[in-house]
Length: 109
Length: 273
Image (cartoon, rainbow over the protein chains, first blue to last red):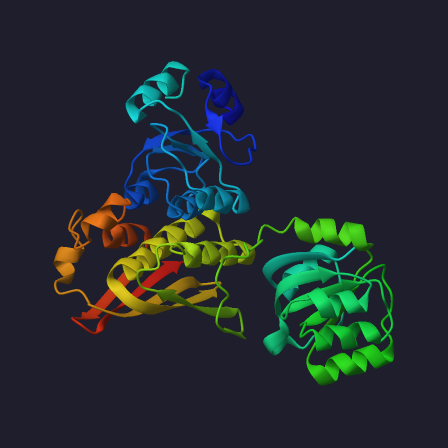
């Protein structure tokens, strides 16, 4: 599924520059090693972490986009770094659980 | 218009991409560049060029290579297939610089070089030194303990280097994950460390030597979930107790030596199939 379609159908807020990418699935975790170990290239990464290091992690394993849940404010420096590395960060007011349900409903399995 | 980009690229790759003719080679220390600067105005080169770069220019006089030398560039690539002057070649030979020429015009050459997937973000740390011999490239980096703000930058740089060398995505991913975990361990548990990356056509070999508190019980540290990270570090998502197990899972070989209150030495090897 295309990232832009997901963003459109769930009305997510894009905080960084946006390229359209193919989304291969979803990985949910707030532990960075867990993401590094188990998320696959092209996955959406759903988390509440917002510090700069998420950009390095997402870039290293080619995450399609990071979705920050619960309306957590993402620091400016994280967004700046993400733009520099072409990492896409998206935010939503939904909880991780609520967002997961919606992602599943629109057909990401 | 001057155009700058930050790269760390083997000159060999530039030669391939531009289908360039090599006039002066000087392979030993000059066979990689850390930037490209495209300009026909030599005062621009002197004002804005960064040491270690390559000059891409349509200015054919000997002033081009002299300016490049003054700006501490590694070499020059002339566009539109111009034959460099003998004086230019002589200067390059004396100063250990390379000289290339390409049939591309400036726009075409810039587009081709911009297509390299090796752009290094400006914030990434510079490799400390680079040694190169037959099919073997070595890079070293420093990591500071407790520097969470730049944590992950060395791994990011390593990934870009491995990508530029042209390894398979699968091995790059495994190496990137491993070095990331090793880097985070240094940031969390050590005062500082030096990372050495050696890349050859047979293997990717990474050594991380830190000064820090060391690991008391390596078997315990290898167990998934075991961690000595602080609450604060865990709140940031670090210290899941998966670092060393993650490296072991991804590497073809992992060796750990540690002395409590002195430091830890981790050697990670990936075999190229």
